[in-house]
Image 1 (cartoon, helix red, strand yellow):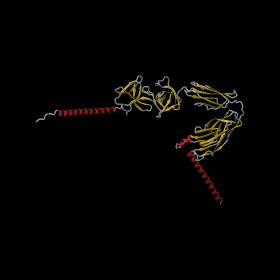
Image 2 (spheres, rainbow, N blue to C red):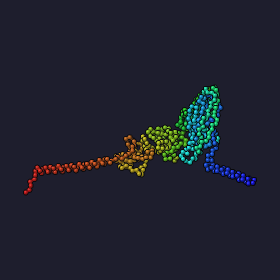
Image 3 (spheres, one colour):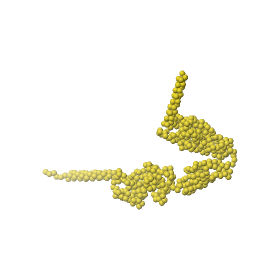
Image 4 (cartoon, rainbow, N blue to C red):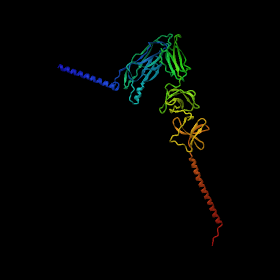
Length: 495
């Protein structure tokens, strides 16, 4: 009996081991096939906390807090997260996204007195999902702490006690399966406010230069930065914000930038009027007008590179040099009032760099050929070869015409009317009549002579009818007179 019991127990243990092994194998296969176990995530809940590097805050100083999640198990959306703060002790300054997730998530932030509300949605993941495509975009995952967003506040003058900043509502955190993940509130922030005193803080809390990227990224403890601007930029807008509101600022060097290296200085003087800090930005103004690696693609898909315009170039009459935003780049161009297209100096990858007309509306690019280009008020025309299916209007023969500026190739009739076939920026061709008195062109349309022919035909018909009627009238008159004469003078009858 004991042997049978032991055998039964052994069989049951072996069965459990086999079942466990089969379950593990099935789970492993699921992970290999789908990249994760269905419905299984690294963590069953998220703890949301408020953190800061400061333990206390001085009156007039800026305090930055971070809203962090202790992990992110494939979250595709979260919020609204509500962050509350004491309005008697602080005022809102700014909001910024967490660097780890800023490339994935689109944030929506709203402000009310004493409350900041933040929501975010993973746009990379949502894009493929909305288009009903195979979702290759992976949601953001991390088993470590992740900063969702940061908020900066300034401690108000005259405030005292503690500055409290806490999460009031966590909102909903959804994973890629659309399931809500449990979220709990973690730690909050309570900073002791230092009593009023003369501040010795001469640091900056923020430093930005409009449309310019600083290297390295701003840090209050880093005082030296570098940046680069295009050649057409002659001044930049520098916006520093001192950490203490009672500190003073002096900015120099941001105007009248020269080609090459320039130095912008931001001097911060603390409230005590003795402590100072100097932040410098070494900003380089490029020698080239053409943006680095900037390209332009036309409507047909051909790619061109922007090039610097050489000195002493010849441009069409009426075109003046200016700077335009083309394809997101600030580039040097030549433009003319009333003409949509602009002249760009481009390289097509094979021929030598040259001027091209670019139509920003139609996205067309055509070479500028001074000998075969006509510029009208509203469009650019090029003398072109006559297409095979297009016939020269009746009465015209091949000829050339010297305008005194260029020699035109076209056709002339017996009345010295000169026409040529030209195409516009969109590739639409037509015959244009040249007016030698004004030097202008207009679309040529042969005169419709059908009414003239009809009138001539009708005139001839009515003329013939008139002649017939006249002859009939003459004959009638003659016959009447003859009858009257015969009655008046009857002829003697022969016996």
